[in-house]
Length: 126
Image (cartoon, rainbow, N blue to C red; front, side, top):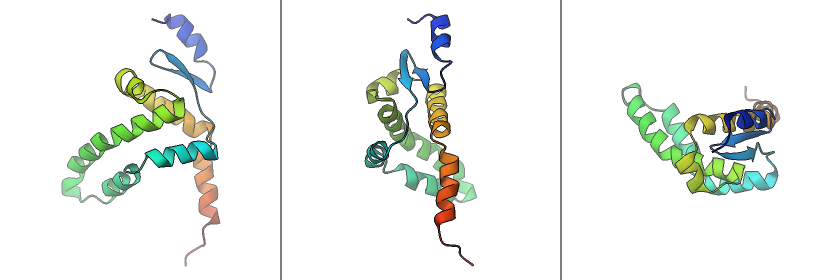
């Protein structure tokens, strides 16, 4: 088991963190890494659309079902991005660590800014 003080010292680097007991890098998303992600993640976009379009009376049951289905894909995403085994992530990494890892990945790669830039490239509709 890692000493908590040692764990805190390592986590000060904004491009590193711990997933359970393993120190991982917050990845730079290269074209190859994007390709790896899109080869694995096939249900997630459809689930997001289903949640967004869910009728009010079915919203909560659809969210719960989508969350259960999405967990496997999110776990695979984290495993790919962190270069860890899927089983390690599934059995050892807490949800709070998964969310923190994904947030740091989004920040490092400026995905919010990238989305704005991509949107500005689309033709304007009147």
